[in-house]
Amino acid sequence: MQREEKSERSQRQVLDAALQLFSHQGYRATTVRDIAESAHVSTGNVYHHFPDKESIFRSLLDEFWRITETRRYPFTRALSIGTFPDNIEQLGLAARESIREFKPYFSLIFVDVIEFEGTHIRKFYSELGKRYGAFVGEEALGAMRQRLRPSVSAIDALLITARVFFNYFTIEILFNVPQPFGKDAAHVIKELSDIVRNGILMSDQR
Image (cartoon, rainbow, N blue to C red):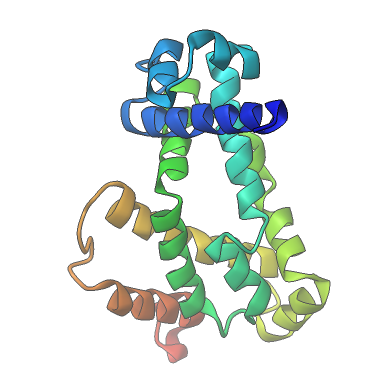
């Protein structure tokens, strides 16, 4: 194995070990020695790749942000292939799958909120509307605007829809609360999609 490949592999081992440790026991409770032992490398090897523990934490979040920009990420894939608001149910399923597949990374978001007051995630969430717009494309956004009420922003509609589903499935999957609404996921997605699409009032009361 060439030196560069060996270095890349050991760096990956460090990141994978840190992801599991940070997501399960938090940032401050995890030491560089813990990461090295879990990764089966020396402490010196960890410092060869990363100057300090926080840079490892930042690297993991940056890695997750990059993943969310690709079709590997279920929610981004659903945004890029569907037509909103026809695909709200698909977005619900994709939000659930995103949290399931990348659960340790989502845990890091809460670690950042609790231990860093959201320092590392602030920029990502403040730019989420722009990112969704880029995923969907201007042509699709134009088509959305033709179907939404004049006072409703297409980007805001996407953001609200995303938050409804991500918040629900965060409780179900990340917080390990089975059926928070007392119903199976398929039923909840159907009901939430109907509420997002049609509101909560009877048509003659709007």
